Length: 471
View 1: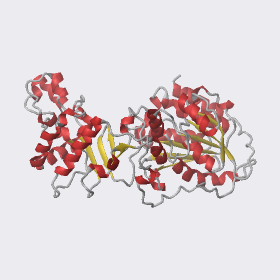
View 2: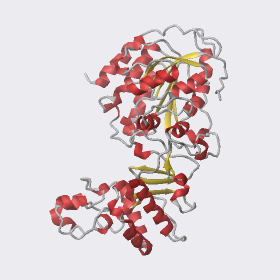
View 3: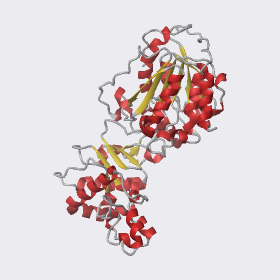
View 4: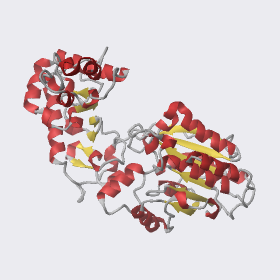
C-alpha cells in the first residue's frame, strides 16, 4: 500500500467518528492548533483575534524552542509521528503545510514527494479525528495549478468528504498595507458552511518599503563583494543606455548577446544528436563564443545553461525570451558592445548575467531601488514594495539600493507582520524562517470574517459576530 493510500485509509476510518464536545469558551475566546508552525505567523494572527493555542507542531528544533520562548507553548516535533487522537480538541486548525513540493522553484513532485508531499494527508487525518469548526491553510499559488489542478482538487475533495465547505483565494501582504509582494493561496474550510463568510477586500493603500526600515541599523550588512560587482555592472548598463532607448520589460539574458545557436525550429541537442560534434560548428554560444573546434562537452559548456537541456524543442516562452534578447542586442550593439567589453560579464555567475528591470519610466540608477539577486537574475523593483522573501538561500535577501546593504532580519520580520516576536539568533536561520513564514496581517484579515460564524455552531461557542483585529 502506498503512503497516499495509507493516509487516505486513515482519513476514511475517521469519517465515522462523532464530533468531540466543544471546548469551553467565554466571550471572544476560541482555541486553535498551529501546524508547521515555523515562527508562528498563524499564532500571532489568531491570538490577536482572541484565540488560545492548545497545540502546535514544528519539526525544526531551533524553531521549536523559539516558538516556546515566544508563545509559552512547546510544539510537538514531526507531525507525522503524532497520533491525531492525542491532539486536544480545538475550534480552528491552521496549517501552512510545506510548499516546496508544489513550488515552481522546485521539482514540483507534489504528493509524490516522499516526505513533504504527504504532510497534507496528516493534516486531513487530524481534521477527521478532531473535527474543528474552521480550517485555514496556506501555500504557494502554484498549488492551484499543480498537475493541471488535480492537486488542489484532491485537497478540496478530501475536505469536502470530511464534511467541510471549501473555498480558496490568492492574496499578498501589499493588499493589506504591508510593503511586500508575496502571492499566496489561502484555503478556508468550515463545518457549518461558508454562507456567512466573505473574503476580505484588498485595501487600496500606497505602500513604501521605507516604512519597515530602521535608521542606520547596527546589524546591517554591506553587499557581498561579488554581488556588489554584479550590481555595478548592471548600473553601468542602465547609465550607458541612451535615454531614447526603452529598456526591455522582458528579462534580459545578456549571455544571448552575440549568440547564434539554433533555438526556434531546432535545438543544440537536436543538432548534436543528428550531426555529432560538427552540428554546431557554424554557430556561436554565450556572448558570441565560437563553437567550432570544440568537443561535445565543451560545446555544451559554451552554451547558456538554459540551452543545455537535452530537448529537441524549446518551450514557447523560452523561444520568445531568446528571440527578444537577440533582437534587442542587434538593435543596440553600438552601446552594448562597449559595455560588454568593460563589464567582463563572462566572469560573473550565470544568474548575475540576467537582469529584470521592473521600474519602467523610473530613474536609471540601480541605487534608487530595492534589489534582489535570484536564480532568475538581478531583479530591480520600485521602493513601494519589497520582493517576496524566499527561504532557499540567504543570498536572496532584499537589498536596499540607496543604502547599499541587505535588509536586516528585524526589517524582514516587519514584512511578514511579525515585528513583535523573537527571531533566531543565527541570521541565516532567521532569514530562512522568515522566507517560510505566514504573513500574520493577511491571516488576520481572512480569519476575522471566517470566525464570525463560530457563535452559531453547537456547544458552548460564544464568539461575537464581529471580531476586531488588535492593533
